[in-house]
Length: 99
Image (spheres, rainbow, N blue to C red):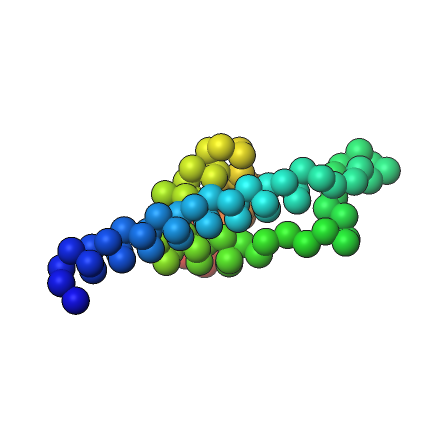
C-alpha cells in the first residue's frame, strides 16, 4: 500500500466514525426528550425506552469521533457539563481527606 491509500483510509475512517458518533448523540437526546412526567412534575425516561450508555458515547469520542461528539452536543443541546452539586461534593470530600 502506498501512503496516499493509507491517507484515504484514515480520512474515510475519521469521517465515518464522526458521522456515526453525531447520530448516536442525536438518538440518545431524542430518547431522553421523549419521556413521561412523574406526579411530582419531574421527567423520567420511559422504562421501555433504552438510552445509550454514557460509556458508549465517550468511547465513540475516544476512538476518533470527538468532532462528531462535539457537534452532536452543540446541535442537540446534549448535556456537556457536570452538575454543581457533584462538584461541591467532590470538593467537600477532598477537603475531608486532607484533614
